[in-house]
Structure formats: structure tokens, C-alpha cells
Image 1 (spheres, each protein chain N blue to C red):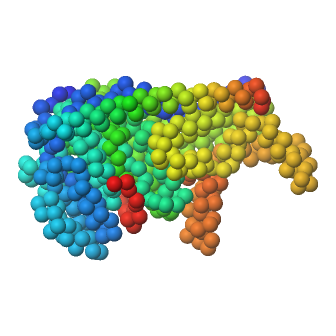
Image 2 (cartoon, rainbow over the protein chains, first blue to last red):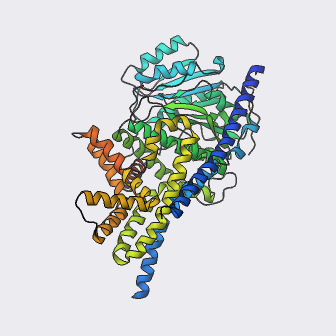
Image 3 (cartoon, rainbow over the protein chains, first blue to last red):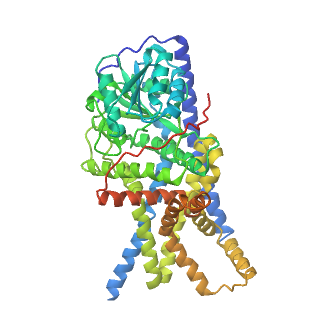
Amino acid sequence: MSGPPPAAAGPVTAEQVQVFEDEVSDAIRYERGLAIKCVACILLVAVILALRVYFFG
Amino acid sequence: MTDFLLAFKSLLVAFVILGAVPLLVANYQFLLVGVHFRRLHYGKCRPYFPRTAILIPAWNEAAVIGTSIDRLMLLDYPRERLRIYVVDDASTDATPDVVLAKAAQYPGNVMHLRRDKGGEGKAATLNHGLAEILADDWMQAILIMDSDVIYERSSLRRMTRHLADPEVGSVTAYIKEGSRPGNYMTRFIGYEYITAQAAARRSQEVLGVIACLAGGAQLHSRANVEAIGGRVDTTTLAEDTVTTFETQKGGRKVIFEPHATVWAEEPGSIVALWKQRLRWARGNVQVTRRFKSVWFRRQPNNRLGSFSFGLLWFCLLLLPVFMLLASGSLIILFFIDYQLAWTAFHVLWLTNVITYIFITSYTLVIDPGIGRHTWRQAVLFPGLINVTILVAAILPGPVSWLGHELATAAGVGVTPGWVRGIELFTYIWLSACMGVAFLGKVAESRRLGRFLGPLFVYIGGYGPLLCAITTAAYIKELRHAEATWDKTEKTGKMVVPT
């Protein structure tokens, strides 16, 4: 669905644009970091299962 | 007869394996968090500061409302584009005085709306404010929040930037538990909120559908509020979920902004948690019924009917049923086919081990700040005995050796009968843990309750406590018990970063 364009919402300063770009950039970096953390946690599960099978079975 | 027995055993095994489904779905949900970066909405955002009305329903909130207003006036947002409307639901404490004092302190920014007849619940209070705000055309966006929540300075502008996309109807933020030092209960909730908000809402966003806008942080465009009728639902106990569904049914997007942080004070006791969550759980049962035409049916302009979303919704809603079925089936199998019971249990528990390690470790690193504060509750979320069973499943050799040593030290010989007894206890515990967690609620208000309440929750588990509450919600709904809006008491004990 595509609605009407949003109403004018006040003038935006160059500083606000810069803050916006910095925050979005930080947010994207954080979200990409979550993907790496996800892989790390999967590896942790794999390591624990391997230890279970080969050493503590 | 043999065929019948075989069929019966197969059915019982199927019920046990069915118990693993919510666990597999939980893993799937957390895996989606890992791909959230591919579904970010920032490409359609820009700095955007609509004239925003902040709507706060308040009933006897004198302890917290002043601080909330002060913090809102510190928001990094053009002040001339902010108006705070406090709808005072016939408070009997000093709420009106506090709000009027703030209206004088922030002229033109803070408005006090008084309802002379109160007690009709949060939704009716919100509708009073919505009618007032929609009566003129100043408002371009509306933020509905709770009187006790505290917004970090950047939160509102991080939310409004999504409304620059005309396809977006609503935006919600990440609510964190803010009681400091807090107690065991607020830390359990703090950890739970990482899973239920930071993780679950990210995964829902990947699926293209959000289950619920946080009641304390829901931003709507004016167009969206008007499209859903200019009022919120008053017929269920989950008006925020109904608003979320109606928004998406109308083809407008709902966005979760995880980097807009809002702090809330959550219940610090089992009784208060029970009251709050029973309302939420009954609300979810009511929403499930109300939107029965949506589930697992393709919708023309939204993803509410997708298979994945339905699976997530029903696995959570029906979790106690899955637990009871698995437990009951294992107990019956134990008596008719001991070895089969043990094998089925192994499959279920292996899934549990994988789920526990993956979700606990991932949750703690999704929000490391809250994770450091709540890691003990994270580890003990399933309860002490369930964690012991999990450890025994991972380290059967060492745990068996330790068990033998302890039994020998206690002068008890470990016989096959003992071993079977422990196995049967394990099967029973799968459902009994809910009952033990419930005992915490019973004990809390009695003698030694301050000690026994937490003890039962730690032994039974916070997760099983939530399942017990969901079970109570089924019972209340089946009995058509009166649906009252019980307010959660707030004391203003939050410590929030500036």
C-alpha cells in the first residue's frame, strides 16, 4: 500500500542530517554484528555437542 | 490388541516429539535475528520531525508522572513540535496537582485532560485522549505511552524517522526493564525482555509482520490512527495487539526500531507479575479468537496469515499444552514401554539442550548491557531442576559419577529402582515445574513468603511460571471470568542513563 506523502515536518538542519547518518550507520553496524554473534552461538552449540559426543558420552 | 497398542504408543511418541516443536520454532525465531540486517528499513527513512502528540493515560501516577514529563521535555526533538496530553482517569492521588504543575512549568507543551468518571480501563482512557487530539489538525503523529516509562533522549526522533515512509503506519521501540538495583524478579523480566522484544520483534520484522506494538511505546501516523477508526479497542484486554493487527490488516507497515530505547519499571513480585501477565495472556487468547479468520490464510496486503507467523504465535500461546502433552505421554510410556519412553525423552531433551545453549548465549549478547545485569536469571530461566537435567544431558558421565558419590556419602545405595524413580520424576517434572512455580505465587503473600516465593520460582523456573500464567488465562477465558484491567503498581525506582 502506498499512501500520500507525509506532511511537511519542519525544517531539517545539516547537523540533524549528520546525526541521522551517523546513527543509521551505527545501527547497521550493530545489526550486522548480530549476524556474527549468531554464527558464534551456533558454533558454541556445535562445540558443546561435539564434546558431549566424543568426551562425555 | 497388538495393533492398538502399537498405534497408542506411536501417538504418545508423537505427543512427546510435538513437545519439541515450540523449541525448534524458538530456534528458528532466533536464527532470523541473525538475518535482520538484511531487512532494515533505514533506506526509506530520513530526518523527520512531525508535530507529535504524546498521549499518556494516568490513574494515580503521582509517584512517576512528573519525572516522565520532565524526561519527555528533555527529548532531542523540536519542542514546538511536541505536546504532552496526560489523560487523568479520575485519579484520587496527587496526579492532577503534579500534572497541572508541569503544565504551568511547560506552557503549551503539557495538557491535563481530566476524566470525571474513571475506572473503565486503559483503552477507554486512551480513547478520551484520542478524541481530544483528533479534534484539531495540529497532530501529525501520536505517541501512546505509559506514565512510568522513560524515553532516552534520542528515542522519539529515532522512531519518527520511519514515518517519513508513507507506507509505515506505526513504529515501536525497545522497552528495557529499568529498576536498579532491582530484585530477582525485575532481573528475570529484564532478561525476558531481550528475548521477547529485542529478539522476537527483530525476527518478526524479518517475517514482515509484528505481533504487538509495545504498549508503552507506540508511535502512529495520523493517517493510521484515522484509518483504524480514531480509537483503540475496548473489548479485549490487549488493545495494543488489536491496534497492531488492525494497522497491518489495513496494509500499513509496523516497524520495530531496536535502537530507540525506552525504560520501564516492571513488577517486582510474583503476585504483581501474575496480575500483569494474566491480563496480557487473556488478551492474547481474546486476540486469537477475534482474528480467527486471519490465521494461516494468505492475506492480500499483509503477512499476518503467513505460516511462519502463525507458527510463532501458536507455539507461544499453546506452550503449556505442549508441555502437558509431552509430560503426560512420557509418564504413560514409562509404564507401558520403559525403553521407548527413554528414547523419546532423549530426542526431546536433546532439542532442549540445543535450544537452551543457543538462545541463552545469543540473548545475552544481543543486549550485552542488560545481559551483564541478568546473566544469573538467564542461566536459571528454565528453573534449577530443569537446568540440572540439562547439565545431566550434556555431561551424563560426570553427573552420574557425582550422583553415585553423593548417594554413597549419604549412605544410600543406588539401585535400578532409584534410577527409574529419577527418570519418572524427570518426566513428571516437565509439567510439574509449572505447578511449583505457581506455588511461589501462593507462598509469596504468606509467612516466609519473601524467602519462599523466590525459592519456588528459582526451583520451578521463570519460564514455567509464565506457562502457568498462560494456563490460568485459558481457565479464566473458558469460565468467561470478568475481564478487568488491573493496573500494575509503579513506584518510580528506575535508574535510567541520561
